[in-house]
Length: 244
Image (cartoon, rainbow, N blue to C red; front, side, top):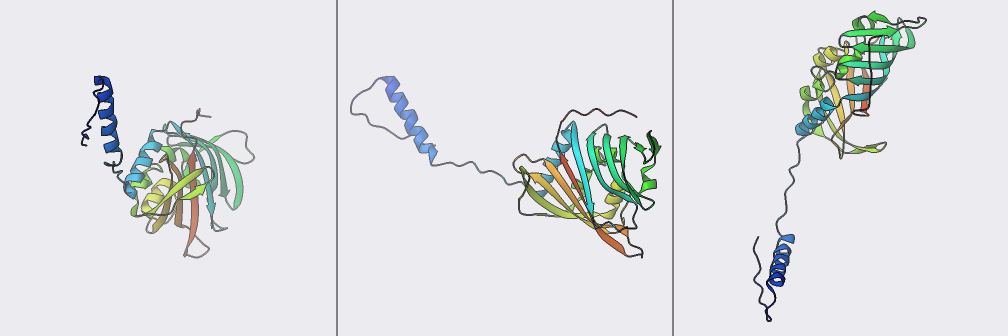
C-alpha cells in the first residue's frame, strides 16, 4: 500500500492534514489488494462437515428407503434422536418374518431394546437377528455414520440443490461394501456402493447421506440395488435417553 502525496495550498491544522492523508491512503487501498479465498477440496469439505457432526451434542435422524425386495427382512425406515454416548431413542419401521411393523426402540452403546408388536415392554435383542443396524452406533464418533465420510473414494463435487430451507452442496463417491456391512449389519460386503453427501451451504453441516447398492438379494442369488437416505438435523437439541 502506498500513501499518496498531497500538496496543500493553504496550511491546515495538523489534525486536518492527518485526516486527509489517512483518507488518501484508504482510497489507494480500496481498489487494490484483494484477499484470495481458498476453495476447499471435496475431501476438505467432508472433513469439516464430519468435525461439525462429531462435535454436536445431539442430532435428529430420519431414515427412508426404496427398492427393498418384498422378501427381504430388515429396517425400512427410522425416526428419532441420538447422542454421541452413543445412544438413540425413536422408532423403526421394520419387516420381520415377512410382516411390516413400527416398533419403539431405545439403544445405548451396544445394547438394543425393542418394544415389539403385541408387547407392552421393551426386550433386549441382537440387531443382527433382525438384519438391522444398532441405531445408537450410527452416532458413534468412531465407527458411526460419519466414519463413512473418511472412507469414501473417487470424490466428485456436484451441483447445489435446495432441500426445504437449506441449500445443499453435493459430494458423491464410492464406498467399500465392508464399511456398509460393519455399520448397518447388512449388505454385500464384497461389492462397492455409491454414496452422496448433502452439506449445507452456508454452514457446512452434514444434512444427508444417500447410499445406493446391493443391500439385499431377491428370490434368486442376484443382488438388488436398493437406496437408503439418512437425514440429520437439529444439531444440539436437548435429548434425554435412558435404559428402558
